[in-house]
Structure formats: C-alpha cells, structure tokens
Amino acid sequence: MDFFDKTTKAVRDIGNATREQTELANLKIQKAAIEKKLESQYAEIGKRYVAYIADTFRTEPFDVTDILDVINPDLERIADIVEQVEQKEQQFRQHSIEKDRKRALEQFENEKRKLDKAKDLDIVTELEYEEKLAKARRKFDNFEALKKLQLQFEMDIITREEYEEKVRSILQ
Image (cartoon, rainbow, N blue to C red; front, side):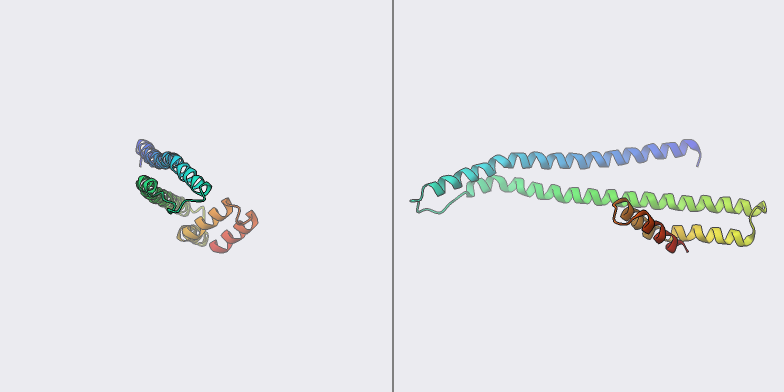
C-alpha cells in the first residue's frame, strides 16, 4: 500500500469515527432535551401532590394520569435513545478493537518482514529468527489478553509493575 492509499484510508477512518461520535453526541443531546422537558411535568406532579396533601379533607384519590399520558411518549423515547446510545457505544468499542487487532496484525507482518530480511542477510541466526518470530506471533495471538491488560492498566486497576509482569508471563 503506497502513501496515498494509506493517507486516504486514514482520512476515511477519521471521517467514519467522527460521524459515529457525532451521531452519539446527537443522541445524548436529544436525551438531555427530553429530560429537560420532563422536568416541568415532574414539577407539576409535585405541585399537585402538595396541594392534595394540603387539602386533608379530600376524598378522591390522588390522580396525575393526565400528566402521565403526556410524558409516556417522552419516557419511551428516552428508553429508545438509551438503547441506541448503548448500541453506538458497543459499535464504537468493537470498531476500536478491530482497528487495534488490525494494527497488531500489521505490526506482526512488519516484524516478520524485518526478520525475514535479517535472516536472508545472515544478520540473525535461524535460532534467533525462530525465537523472535515466535515472540511476535505470541504477541499477536494473545492480542485479546494483552488488550484487556492494557485497559486494566489505563483504568488504574493494576499497577505498571503488575501490567509488565503479566505481559511478560503471556509472552513467554
């Protein structure tokens, strides 16, 4: 892949990621707007309840079904938006993992090419070649485990020392 192709692909990836982020942000804005709209309805329910309690001689039950009828479509819309946000975030995470997996494969292939060239030029012995290639292959094969460790470290679940120790044990 030449420089132009790589650049075009990178720009396309950035565009896709930006579009996904924009869609996610728009959904969150819609949700916030609906929640803001609901606040006045909740306030009306509260006012009615205070008036109901203040009038201790009322015999009819406390009734806000008219308000509930008004806010039910908004509550359903919020539930729908929350589901869409979760789906978008899941897609975003999956896209990120796929991108990282692809990058890991490219790193493995680059390492293999360098090792092949070094072996052809007698810069490394067959044993060194096999050891280094096996280590690079283990790194790619254990991508999922290494990715989880990286996330644990980034979230401060494990220390740098624990992270490095676990990575070494995986790659051995």
